[in-house]
Length: 240
Image (tube, rainbow, N blue to C red):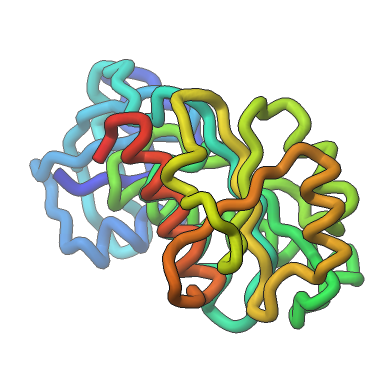
C-alpha cells in the first residue's frame, strides 16, 4: 500500500486535503479515488486510509482509524555521521533511516570537505536531510522519522553521544571487529569523513568512551561505512 507523510493532524473519519507536497507525491504515484493509502505524520502510528478526490488543484483523503504499529529498533541507535560531499550525505541519511537509526547527527571534522559555517546554509541542509529521511520512511514503513540534529563540530558531538552507554567508531587498523563489540544496548556510532578521522580526533573519541572496531581489510566510503555499521548493530539486535 502506498504511504504518504503528511505534516498535519490526522483525525479518523475526517476528509483531509493534503499539502501541496503530499498531493504532488500522490499524483506521482498515480493514485485515484478509492485507492488505499497509508498516512503517517511522524507522531506515532499510521492511518490506513482511502483517496477521496484527485483534482487539478487538490487531493483529499478519507482518514482511517489509527494503528499504533511502530517499526523501530529494540534500542535507540544514534549515527554521528561526518558530512559527506555531494550526494553521499543524502545516501547515508536515507540508508540510516531504512536501517532504523533513531537519531542522525551531522558532524563536521578536521577533514570534512563540506563547510556549513553559515547558519542559514546549515539550517537549509538540515531541512533537506529531514525531507530525505521522511521520504525513506514512506518507503521502508517507519512511522517515526529519525531526529536530524543540528550540524555540530566534532568536539560538541561528544555531548550528543554521552547518553549512549555503548559508543563505537570505525578504524581500519583496529584488531577487534566491530561485530564483536556491538550488543543489545543503546548505541552511538561515529563515522568519519572521506579522509577519515585525524589522529587527534581518534584520541579524543577514545577519551570520550568510543571503542574502535574494524570492518575488514577494505577501506569503506563514509556512506558505505554507515550502512555496514548499522547492519552490524541490526544483526546484534536480532533484526537481520
